[in-house]
Amino acid sequence: MKLLFAVSSLQHISPLLQKNAEALQPDKYPYLHKTKMGQHEISILETGYSNTATTYRLAKVLNQEKFHLALFCSFGRYIAETTAEPQFFNVVNEKLGDEGMTVSGEWKDFYDLNLVTKEEPPQVRGGFVNLTNSYMNVFLGFRKVIGVTVHHQSNSVLQLTYHNKLKASVETTNSFAFSFVCLAEKQNYYHLCFADVNYKVGAPSEQNLDVFNATLAQIIAIL
Image (tube, rainbow, N blue to C red):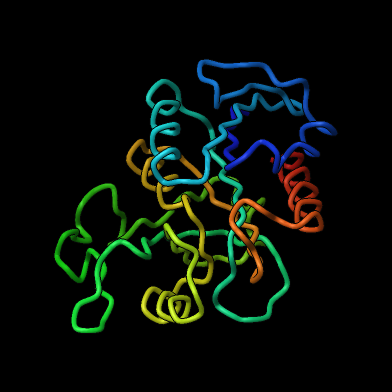
């Protein structure tokens, strides 16, 4: 299987690579590496944390080659509840959070402002919806949620806005870009987000890193 495995930072998966992969080999770009895990040929894309870097790096790669599957494994904040156990979610619909403006005390996003319509490609079914159904047996156990991508980690008031207005459960910094490019390039993909109510950008806890790597090792083993 030819797999594109995307993470914001290689540090997040160093335990996985040390235990399960052959030594990383450099590829075409400084942020792209190659390895093998079992029978899988894996390209590892280090996206960075921003939408800008993720868009540029992923588009460069997918313009040159396609994969059986692109798997983005991120860390994020769970905003649907104030208390919940950290866990993986299957993010099947991505939305933008803080792109817009406040009008008469009410937050308006690009759709409200008629700057974007739900018919514009690469949107599917009125949004950035992932319809990938390959390897569903592998991902069936992960709860499907809506994700919201933000430039600034939100406070409790904004979290409530995102949850009520967008029905979002998971907040990230760059997953919208990953979904946008995959949809535009017609690349099958999944976005698995390990979400924690206490997550700080770029600083997952050691315990969460352990669970993150152990779960990813299981996923790759059964793909």
